[in-house]
Image: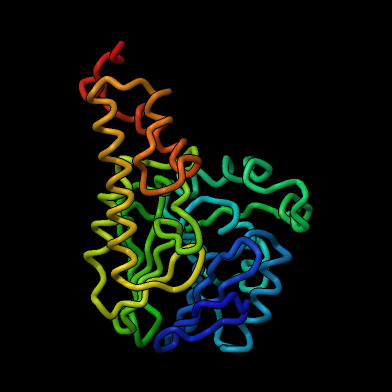
Length: 285
């Protein structure tokens, strides 16, 4: 699924992904005998209504569960529409994700340009918090198939959850993986822990696994391993520079990053902040 079609396309047995033009964001639907699981709800109520209309073109089964993969507004601001249309659906997220959703909602205008044509739709969208939370792993029974919801650790945020559909060999990674742009190191990211988290995510895949990133085209295990290696370089470089006594300002000017400098600036700042004092030397004069 390389093109942004907006329509839900089947990427494995009864697993559909819609790659949206706006935000290049993916929404995933998984069908079992009991009904549908929806993974993420898009970034506004208006976008969610259009998304649900397209979902009904591939399945009219009841929506029994909804998962927000993490706290960020572009994945959760459709919750109000989805829960109003499907009041019996169980809205779920990691406990840390729920705690972080209000702050992400407040950061909308930091993430979205004022000239974005959808900014008013985003600002007017209501934030509905998931009522079902978990801290580690949750199994979801869809009837003839089980789906695993797993928190592998901190990375893009402190509440990232991946969705594994074992019988279809599909893994929905949320924003722990991005295909269409470098990983986003936001103000609530954990750059030193991200590669370890991706290492655990990778252990849940096979060479044939269909991997759905939070944004961009569907990828595979090789792509996941590549992004794990790149996030590892970021973390290791931060450790090395801080351990050599390089100042934060000079570290920000360092050129040997796997991503553009502007993509890792926040990672460097947070990395220096998260390092224990014993891992940092005084700046070299």
